[in-house]
Image (cartoon, rainbow, N blue to C red; front, top):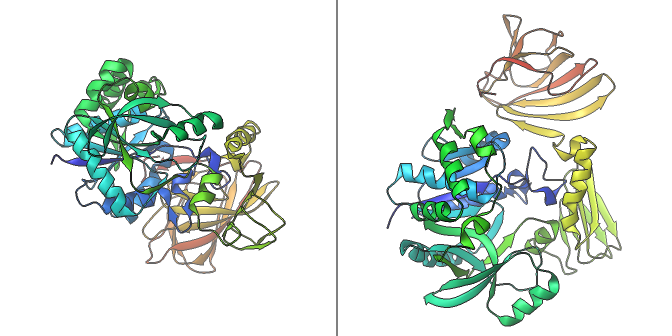
Length: 472
């Protein structure tokens, strides 16, 4: 068997899962029910001992989030696993082309298993059995996709119409159907030969690139040029911005699968959920006898068929019917089920208003740890800062704000205008406007401190970096 590289596509923005998913913290990295979707996908890959180390593609803005979860799951970037950074989103065809080029440099005639990072698939044994059927088809030179037996006329998925039987569990694809309206979906279900398009694929890297060059030569040429101009940045592979940005934004279906004679489909004999909306989250979540999914600190009275999620406080509901309520520390979404596609429209309105809730949470993750906004007002802001063991912030200065740091727990090494000092619990330091400074954690436990900022402008872009361990 040739080497099989799992390719994990993790560049999506997850706009329909706002307010938990944000521009700088998309859904695949959000802790949902004790696990991230990206982490669960890595676990799925690790459970298949016939797979090689993964190739992960993510947006460059999310690289430290992806890298941290990869390390937690035993796939340290640069230590076998590879993390490829997309400078901009260009859909699945260009991303998979980069993965195919990377795999061909690492192995001879490799197979790719392409997995979106926002799916829930179980049980593992059933998924593996269907996957091995698709792998056999891919070894024979076919481009195989996994299809899902539909149990309702869903309008949020693309469909595949099965054609003739090619081999046991493998069918030719008669045609693809883009997201249909409900009446069309009902008609297709009544025919008994349709599947949901899962977005999971298995094929040889070389054959995919050959078909991409035949049917979408501009994508093939642009991806090859962007790959050849790549550079290394710490444990990351950076793709050339100019060439990749010039590529069309196109899915693998439109670029290749709808045109090639090599396409086939294997029905997936496992439960599957594409967790792209709050309705799909409700469908996949455990429910009580009234059909409610209540996550977090939730109390319900006379409520049925609803999805209620609380992140930071008590959420109480009375008389709710088929509703979605999602609470986060700085925003609450309330809507009837069935209108989840409109969350994306709402988010665009928030972005147009330049609302920070569209892009970030109150808690923001950095490669050195995290910070959380506790209070803010005219000319002041209070943050709680956590610095991981052995980590350090950049050597930096601010033009518009002064800072006061109070250590709550751990030991802080402060460099201030060329002088070093150590602070421990309850000690503090003042950082004047324009001073060069750096914060480090030399201790054996995480460092926690409170930062009080003051000044006429407190934006995160008021940072001038002189030295940085993370290449920012």
